[in-house]
Length: 340
Ligand code: SAM
Ligand code: SF4
Image (cartoon, rainbow, N blue to C red):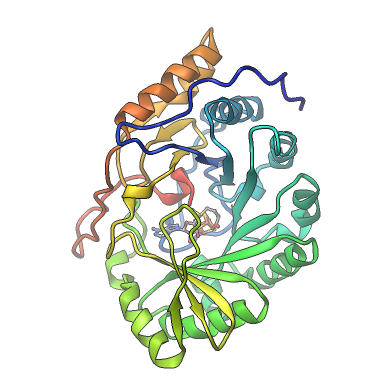
């Protein structure tokens, strides 16, 4: 797929709180080959294909953002690597690296990463985020409802061989991987991967009760402090994570605490679902329909106008809260809709 001639760049995206939006998370599918318990129910209803943006539409949306000053794009899902034309999109966007785009990355569960790692590296991807919540095959099968840990570990190893930097994301879950977290960190650092822990967020209905597994990272941090020497790092990724260096492992640990700490003041990002809904905030309802824009008679103009609307409605901060047992989630949509 060819990129059109670069146009004169339009006004950069800046919201009403003077935050420059330079980072897009673009979900390319809501489908997934795993069924992580905190993310979706076993019988997840996936979207009809006609509702999902085509390859050309995804490309147009991404270019619309690059023209408005977005310099980093993360492709996500659902599981991005289950979409058949995903590599075509990656290659097309990879050709904009150094031409408006500074970084193209991917968040993946790594089940298919062994197959695609070399292709991603060839397309200009330098870093991937891999979600890994346990190194125990039995626990993995239970948590993701699929017996795929071997594929995931093979995917991570292939990424390393292909020269991709791997950052692991681990959702901290009380009574599930809580006791294993120090071992996962030690393993990650031994393999020279950074790792970030995430608190479970109340997004979408799942089969069980998320509240039962909610684990504040302050609890984990106390545990890690007893075991290791953690020093706060001045490393910043422009995102919500705060970082610590662990003296004994020589590695870096990120903590994302949407529920115990608010991180919205420095927000530089928006998210677009596979159906082209722009969500101005992961934790809010504010949305703009980019699919209608790219399917209109004058897609470039309509897209530009839609992005302006998004800047006007991006909220100052999210309003997440873990609900009590039995209450509906704070937001009805799943993380697999909005992308992680
Ligand atoms: N399938 C890919 C993966 O798992 O990396 C990309 C999409 S997934 C929705 C992105 C991230 O969201 C994963 O790291 C996953 O652990 C996280 N996630 C999903 N549901 C979540 C929830 N309710 N709370 C916190 N993190 C969640
Ligand atoms: Fe799939 Fe990622 Fe959700 Fe797990 S977290 S079910 S891998 S989309």
